[in-house]
Image 1 (cartoon, one colour):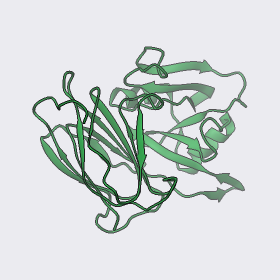
Image 2 (tube, one colour):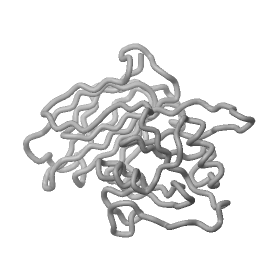
Image 3 (cartoon, one colour):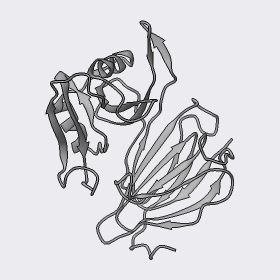
Image 4 (tube, one colour):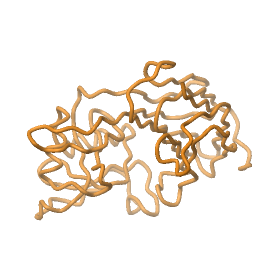
Length: 251
């Protein structure tokens, strides 16, 4: 069983899955389930970012048993932590995305739902935001001093092609330190199968710290700000500890 054990500071955990490709009504549904909150979740095409027309977006949501999210539903999800720096279709042909913390490449200095308005050209290609209150959720917000987090069914294997997201946050003036105690992911020269990515901010460009796979322990990391985002493909076990004092500088 391949596992990952990490110690870190106070955090917000979001653990989601993606489902396999499939045909329904003669249409290939090849999208990826990303982050989710309050029944709202973001999807993009397996072809990459910004590949879905308005018609495609509606079909993707319907295929998963949901529908396009309304702006009110997106606003409710943003208020409890949904942050995705990717514009997507939502109800009635609007496009936008939810931002918790703005960055140089995301949010235009604003927080909330960044609304591009109603699009006249429904053939424009974006991602999509779906709503399904019955959709499977895992994770949540934790503020206790310590917690062990395990993937569903751990230590047994679970569904393939699963993607996990951890948003780790501390108070202003503090830092987050990640120490890897055990690391065992599939060896791959390009880290294209099983891998772990670390971001030192919400900025998915400037905040990218590195991608890791194999069995060699990554070095310890200390955040430069109050946020770490960890993305992992495959199963995981983490030990989480709240630090009562600011972490030292990056080692």
